[in-house]
Image (cartoon, rainbow, N blue to C red):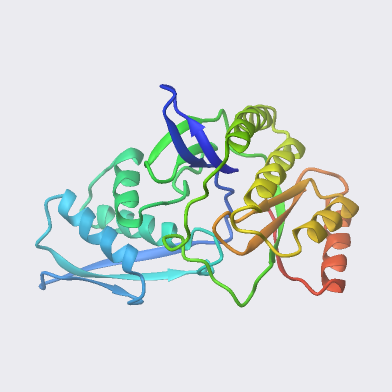
Length: 276
């Protein structure tokens, strides 16, 4: 879910709830050296390099040089939070190297400064509504999201989306009001462990997002989802992916996933399956 939401003082923020995928990971290693510069490998990871410099400055080691080496299984430019994972792994690698303990709030403050907008990847124990440009938790839910299997469909395999180049959505008042009941429904879904209700919330948010970053053939994917027994669709709000969602605890899960995969193959979609 992604939109605009109020905090406890009724101040409005852009916020999101990130769907975790344990199969996708980023690892970072920080190796100090005698230089006064911070380098990054691969060299294209500029946000992570910036996060490294900011972290060293915050722990009063701004004169410390070194190299951050990043390895990742997360596709780039698909809306899967690859840059956030790079940034968070880099910050943690430096903190570990110098045996410094930070709170989640301190880590997210540096992450947002390095990246401008970031996902709530760091919060893995419970689902949170996170202000991705403010670096604050708007609401922490009672527990983690229920277990959900995903068929990840790339609607535009030849395209990539840059989060910073993508203009933030300008929601109208109808959409702003729509996020209020969606937030309440998600709160109830998490509390009750109701995967089906999570799917409904995600689908509603995906439909709203069509006005800002439309996913080609989303209507067709919705029909396949409904016919196969999926519980809904979730989208990368600043990427090219659509996730077809299945209740991990449903006795019909395997049959539903097989039925959906067959339909996606017939419709010539590019997809990958991730188990909860």
